[in-house]
Length: 242
Image (cartoon, rainbow, N blue to C red; front, side, top):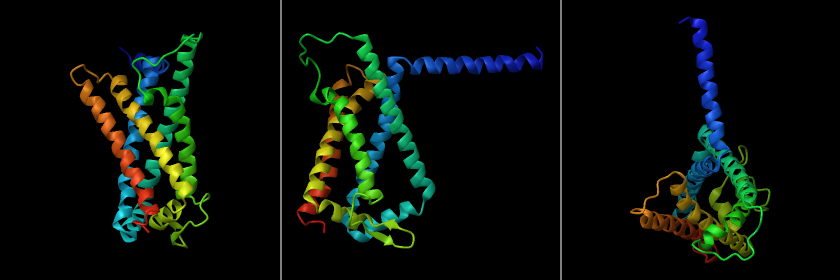
């Protein structure tokens, strides 16, 4: 076989692999797989974010040192943000496309619909997703850039590094802000509760023997995130963190 014929063959194989990948993505199973993987990335970030924020209970020195360390590692900080934003975009796009595919497959609505075999969390996924997207935008404007926060603090005026502890206290001292945050965490809990369970199904990891345990794990993880995240604004409002 000549070298000239090997190159087109390799190119053809790559083209075929790309075509198969695109075909898989355009299928409902492919959309669900993308949502599962990107949802897993998002859930991992949410857990890490909560653990970092819980350092507020250790005092301003620890919390602000944690924030400073992140800003002193730009590749880590901006790399994580880039991966998260890409995952979020893919998650939203796949969700919208899957919703349209489901609507096209069932163009005629039910005459009478009753929720059989579905949880409240699963029935609110289409609402919780957009609400969380709006909250993320507000959250970044509030605690990252300070655009929505008149009392935004900086550790170093020259380098403009946010002071996490002072910003958390100043932000959550406003009862309205705390209530909005707690409401968003309830929505997040519902979204992750169903999303974590759907992830196992989408990746084909469900099994009758393990299904109850997987459901319990999804429920426990979502409740733990709700408790940990809500503890912070409640502690600020109660004057425990000040």
